[in-house]
Image (cartoon, rainbow, N blue to C red):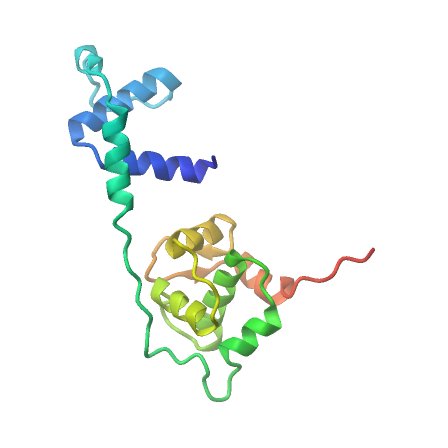
Length: 181
């Protein structure tokens, strides 16, 4: 399991708990795993004796994750602008080989070619649909993974930005060069 996935799972489980339950679970984790940070305010030892019901945590986490946010397409987005390459031409020229590269290509095209001021997850979804690319099960998470790779800045999901590494990927790294044998 990756660190990001572990954090996401932990976040889902803790978010499903009330403040007192969350404090007990965090105090237990600190004691078990020796986290250096101290939880403030300290929990009295008597409060930590209540057993944690793992099933309750799992069920609450499942309930939370089953409520996925629906992202709709931006029907006003023009991906074949006059005088500029279409999204299809641009993507074909760049030939991304995986879904994270496709996300970077989408953000680059939307921001640099058609000059969107704020690139949203909705705009990226529209780009994927327009090109008939399979949409990842969790597009927001995939965009964040591209951010973790250093290609995108996804701190604001309603204003996704390219990093210099993302620009370099699109401008100099794609299409991938065939390795000489």
